[in-house]
Image (tube, rainbow, N blue to C red):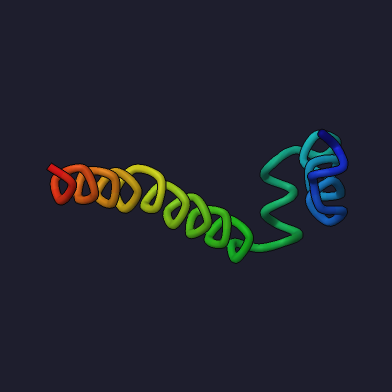
Length: 63
Protein backbone atom coordinates (compact mmCIF):
# COMPACT_ATOMS: atom_id res chain seq x y z
CA UNK A 1 0.00 0.00 0.00
CA UNK A 2 3.04 2.30 -0.08
CA UNK A 3 2.20 3.26 -3.65
CA UNK A 4 -0.97 4.96 -2.39
CA UNK A 5 0.91 7.29 -0.04
CA UNK A 6 2.11 10.53 -1.66
CA UNK A 7 5.87 11.16 -1.65
CA UNK A 8 5.73 14.17 0.65
CA UNK A 9 3.73 12.18 3.20
CA UNK A 10 6.37 9.43 3.18
CA UNK A 11 9.02 12.05 3.93
CA UNK A 12 6.91 13.48 6.76
CA UNK A 13 6.33 10.03 8.27
CA UNK A 14 10.05 9.24 8.13
CA UNK A 15 10.82 12.59 9.74
CA UNK A 16 8.32 11.95 12.55
CA UNK A 17 9.71 8.46 13.17
CA UNK A 18 13.30 9.70 13.15
CA UNK A 19 13.08 12.98 15.09
CA UNK A 20 9.70 12.86 16.80
CA UNK A 21 6.46 14.75 16.46
CA UNK A 22 7.60 17.82 18.41
CA UNK A 23 10.54 18.39 16.09
CA UNK A 24 8.28 17.89 13.08
CA UNK A 25 5.91 20.60 14.37
CA UNK A 26 8.87 22.94 15.03
CA UNK A 27 10.15 22.52 11.47
CA UNK A 28 6.87 22.39 9.53
CA UNK A 29 4.67 24.57 11.74
CA UNK A 30 1.14 24.31 13.00
CA UNK A 31 -0.28 24.71 9.50
CA UNK A 32 0.34 21.00 8.94
CA UNK A 33 -1.58 20.07 12.08
CA UNK A 34 -4.43 22.37 11.07
CA UNK A 35 -4.52 20.87 7.57
CA UNK A 36 -4.66 17.32 8.96
CA UNK A 37 -7.42 18.35 11.37
CA UNK A 38 -9.49 19.95 8.59
CA UNK A 39 -8.98 16.92 6.34
CA UNK A 40 -10.32 14.54 8.98
CA UNK A 41 -13.13 16.93 9.89
CA UNK A 42 -14.33 17.03 6.27
CA UNK A 43 -13.85 13.28 5.80
CA UNK A 44 -15.75 12.36 8.93
CA UNK A 45 -18.54 14.83 8.18
CA UNK A 46 -19.07 13.21 4.80
CA UNK A 47 -18.73 9.69 6.17
CA UNK A 48 -20.83 9.96 9.33
CA UNK A 49 -23.34 12.74 8.63
CA UNK A 50 -23.94 13.35 4.93
CA UNK A 51 -23.80 9.74 3.69
CA UNK A 52 -26.20 8.33 6.32
CA UNK A 53 -28.53 11.28 5.71
CA UNK A 54 -28.61 10.58 1.98
CA UNK A 55 -29.14 6.85 2.54
CA UNK A 56 -31.99 7.41 5.02
CA UNK A 57 -33.54 10.09 2.83
CA UNK A 58 -33.51 7.73 -0.15
CA UNK A 59 -35.04 4.87 1.87
CA UNK A 60 -37.80 7.09 3.23
CA UNK A 61 -38.69 8.40 -0.23
CA UNK A 62 -38.84 4.89 -1.72
CA UNK A 63 -41.34 3.63 0.87
